[in-house]
Image (cartoon, rainbow, N blue to C red):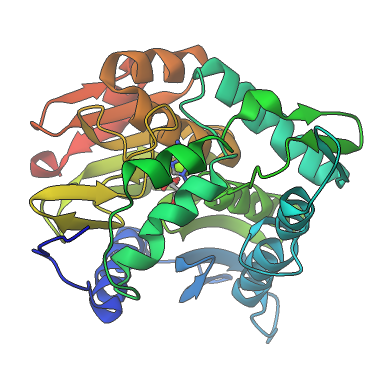
Length: 362
Ligand code: AMP
Ligand code: MG
């Protein structure tokens, strides 16, 4: 199939630069003057295929080495390489996928899983069920077929899959055909997991566990791509400010969230990873019901709640569901939501109205 490309390869440096600006945007709002004995540590780095921007406030006694931001980077790298990434051969997800891809005479493949993976998948399956499959991490074959993460980074030639290929990949998608037992996962052969929709949120949960275990850290805000965790407080007592990117105006903000204490914020948008072919935007959030990028009328969804995994899972699910059903799903989880339609209409939960200020009011 021949496609006239409007946006040829999107150069990876351009993407990197844009993300760096976004990350810097988050940290810009976070700088503040610290009390004498509390030092601010800031770092911008990459992990999990995205920019990680950290600002930590650390109580310091004497001349101690600053190790906290490096500790957090190590936690993220381990999470990706040992647990979540289907690309890292040694991760638990890659092991599950390899076994599920193998030949079998039986109707299903049974693979063991760690208690932590069981906990993660149990939470995901609940949200999949509550969203009628709008979130479905068994779409690994489909997401690899579209390959939008790499496409958007300009690493491969753009080729939009045909209907037959999409239908074939969709035969191996279906969270409801996977059974979660106590220590094992039972899945139809061919099913492939892709935890991309929840990975950065899980990362925020792990960061939070580290922060809680580190009494010297009095406050922190860490952004792992579109997922952010806030924790504790700033030395001057002022609230955290987390900027939400404008989905259509590059480098601009839609507005700012004002938060105190611990929160998890995740944004899913069609502007993060996409290519435009013949005037059509192909982005990285797929509708498991159709096998193509979700066209729910939304271009950005931000969720604020008290769990990283939940915030990330809900932002993806709500994006696929669209404004009405998306808002209802978020509310059923007691989460705050901000949904932006392609025509610019913004929908918010009541709680979101209290913490969100549009850009012009800043
Ligand atoms: P996010 O940016 O958190 O919305 O997650 C998008 C990523 O999750 C994509 O890059 C895919 O790897 C994966 N994904 C896309 N659509 C879905 C979906 N409907 N359910 C689960 N995972 C998805
Ligand atoms: Mg997500």
